[in-house]
Image (cartoon, rainbow, N blue to C red; front, side, top):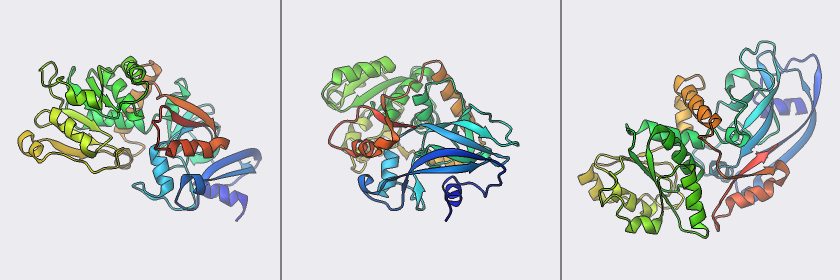
Length: 361
């Protein structure tokens, strides 16, 4: 197979008709088998002559792309969706337009874009793509925010909007509050007028971490132990939450359920404990609580790239980011050449992860 055919396949392009050429040094991280990220992820560097883009295509230079837990699970072959192999890795990130086809209407050189579909392959330096498959975002927001815009802020926004009708001043209770989603929940809830009670695991430097979350807008921050002994809801100072967000699962959910209001909803979007969800039977009978799950990928499948709901969500999140009301999670930029170390750190379950790793191309 020629290098042109390979590039076309990996970029999801139609066959290219070209008049002139452009020299590009390109790289990508890819899989041809599932397994241990330290063993199966491969890097490919190649120099190629790119043909002129087709009339409806754009040439994208990727700028930043994060390593998310879903990426690790995808590599391991245990994620909810298994891609066909070989597969260019990376589900999230943004790029800058370097060239546009003659019939491209809504994008121009210098615009920032994110992929409109899941598992697009953002861990690469360049891509050719149809305009219709891309979403334009503002190019005046923090690059790290742009790189992490699609998954975690979207998850936080949808969970806050789609499961309970909350009023100003209502309480949202969540665990894993220092996770990327948790940080977004705090900030977005604050902008929507909701208050948050945030739970996290005790660790070295806990007071500093609590202050960081409070600086983001958290109303209450407690460790698991503090929450168990707390009378925050029992004293009547706070109304029981109608919406509870769970990323931990396991037996820790029991304490969340005890705090829930009657007819409230618990949304599970993760299982950091790697344990089944444990919920007392009495909560179903006497509190009439509702348990639901949330997966951003499924929401994107249902709400296509042209849907009003998707555009409204992105516009709202970008407006918050532009105002400084929505900030990227604590992060560290790493070069693509350091991918082995970055993946090893992301897979390390023996320590707390204090920063999201983001590839900078």
